[in-house]
Length: 159
Image (cartoon, rainbow, N blue to C red; front, side, top):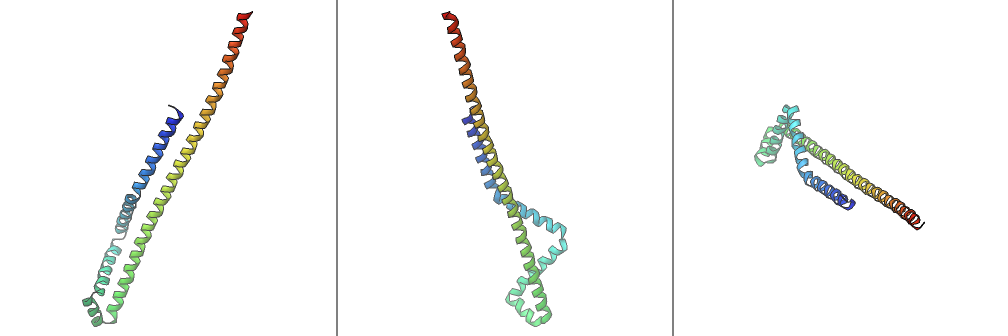
């Protein structure tokens, strides 16, 4: 296999890896977010249930009948709605933090993969150049030896 063929094969492998990395980004992000959510629900089932209730109350408090009920219920109902809203916002913030963490991990993985591919490309280029230099040097040595052998043979024939 020639050095050009090796280079072409390595380029194809690098391009295929970069393509797989680009295609994986969204899928991996979604999978990681789903796994994080599942893990959170398994670790904190009551908090999840409470959060769902709070979100339901918050949505209910935003509707016209819910606001009307809050006016009748007085201050305690208003405080409960505010607490529910605050809890819901906290949960949304946590979900956003988890998503950002997943994106950061994916970005780090992509950078690492790109660095590795660039290193492999540089290494292959270096090895190809080294092989080329060694081949050139060996060819010169063989040519010198062949020239000397021919010269010695001519000298023997002429004497």
